[in-house]
Length: 296
Ligand code: PAF
Image (tube, rainbow, N blue to C red; front, side, top):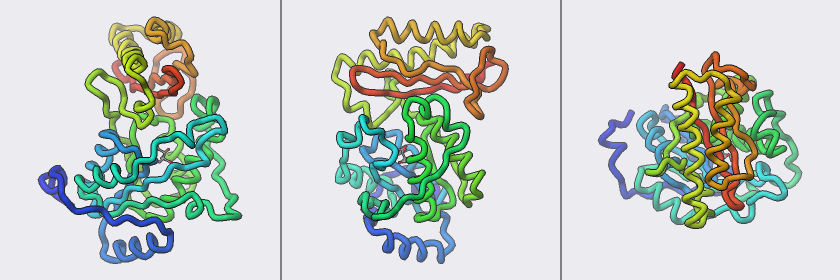
């Protein structure tokens, strides 16, 4: 394992850039033959500090870190932002070079989904609620591409951000159910100084929307405060959260929910580990965020 001093400091080595599936298999075969532990950070690029924190964790846990950069078409709905999603590979590579990433896999859509490719994962129960309801087909696309990346990279550990909390649960369930030989590590949300969770989509926000967006983490903080003060009725907490969004002018809300932390079942009373989750539009930008409620 690398020491902290080795992993924390920037290095100038550029990662090896691979776009071809066959080439990736060869490189990974050689790395595995030397017995190194491989860490995988799957991303869609437009990297920010949240992604880089996953990279740092992989660097400190593993001998060899792979970052994948692929804007996966199968996880976007027909009216979502697939075309508009920021593609910033040069800047991403420069950022990753600073952190000593060994390999970046940035395939084309054709390489990942060659003609005739038609097999998809049937998603687990935990994918059916919240994001699964608002974005039909989203987790089918996520689970499928993630399993393909697991098969290609053959990592020992893969790193995901808690910001996509439901995604983490879906992937964990898939890995357990399908006996995929990989450990899943969920890493903490990285926030801007004012609390907004880092997201590649934050760059869509104009100045006014950027200010409004802070109501999302504030609403989650309010849930935490209410729980700390003894409130256990989820309806009361959700209503207060909604009001916080509303008074900031965030009125297009997909959900404000409090659910069981393990399987996202709806809760009327807080009687177990739970999570508060929000999906809401700020202007035309859909943002998600969440906070674990364990203070009871
Ligand atoms: O979280 C993301 O960026 C994507 O959903 C992922 C896991 C890279 C799959 O495309």
